[in-house]
Amino acid sequence: MYLILFTQENLIHRYLPIYPQVRIIPNNCTFTLWSIKVITLILKNNFFTQHTEAMSKTSWYKELADDYLSHTGKYIRIFPGGHNEAPAIFKKEGTYWMITSGCTGWDPNKARLLTADSMLGEWKQLPNPCVGEDADKTFGGQSTYILPLPEKGQFFFMADMWRPKSLADSRYIWLPVQFDDKGVPFIKWMDRWNFD
Image 1: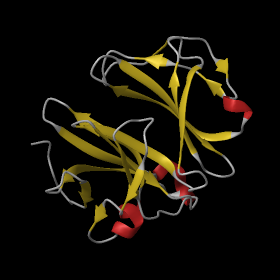
Image 2 (image 1 turned 90 degrees about the vertical axis):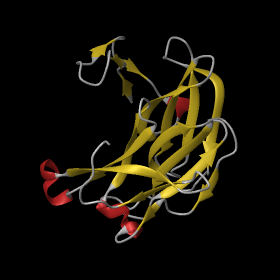
Image 3 (image 1 turned 45 degrees about the horizontal axis):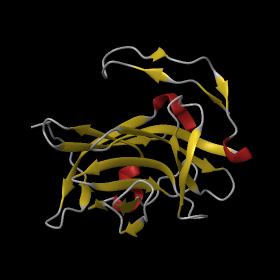
Image 4 (image 1 turned 30 degrees about the vertical axis):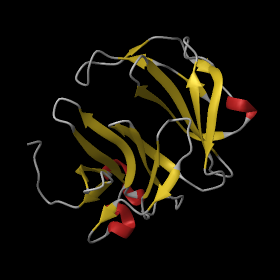
């Protein structure tokens, strides 16, 4: 696995590499999905790397060191062997939420919702956050990111809608994340919506 780190001023600017390409073999294991999550805490930003073991599909989250090329030794394995992939994480009012997918190749499956009070804390699983028609297949998509709009206090669920017979023709799903009266997130299909 090779890692190239990039930075940007905001979403519309181009990404600039901040380190040369670096070969990384986390914990001397083979991994598939790999990404870096920026988790904003009250006093500082903590950077976490996420990767999934190729065979048992266990998600690891490790706190990155200041150079971003190693980790501090603090880590957690979430639901070992649980076959979770494609995690999309966000934090709202001190609670962390993670929407993941099962491992069914290109075929969409039921989303999973997890929550914790800390990235390195104890995670618990809740029911599928998607509701309504095609909720059992995440509306035909697979979670990829939760886009926060802090100035509006809103979050948007983003998912890949894979078309394996024609990958270049794959699509994306963007839907607002809503919250029930207990503050638990849910996602409902909407044919049309806007940022207001």
